[in-house]
Length: 105
Ligand code: FES
Image 1 (tube, rainbow, N blue to C red):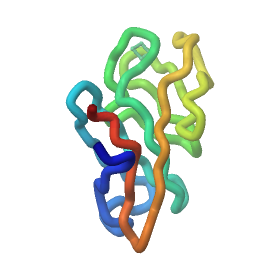
Image 2 (image 1 turned 90 degrees about the vertical axis):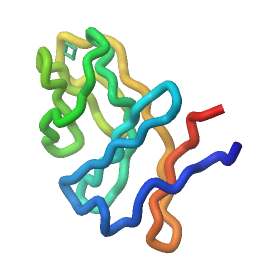
Image 3 (image 1 turned 180 degrees about the vertical axis):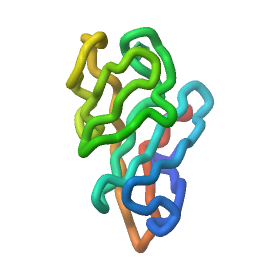
Image 4 (image 1 turned 120 degrees about the vertical axis):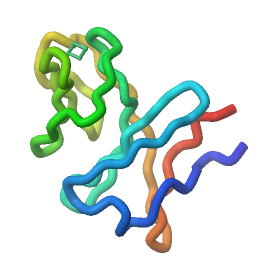
């Protein structure tokens, strides 16, 4: 298993956009916030709902179900009803390619 997996070119995810990537047991979202890439689990810690197309404001993503907000940099809760952070994963960019932590076995 490789530590990282290539998921896109930088130009495939412009600022303000996102891309989903499915691992065997988890879906993640890679977001471009002002040219920096962040990777979060596509799951809300409130009731396990997907964050999917939840609105992003700065570094905050809002769960579309009940409005909890999380910091995409750290996974920290920014707004209730969630009380636990969500997982975040490492991202790196090399030669214009975006790599994320490989979550598959
Ligand atoms: S499932 Fe996300 S706020 Fe309830």
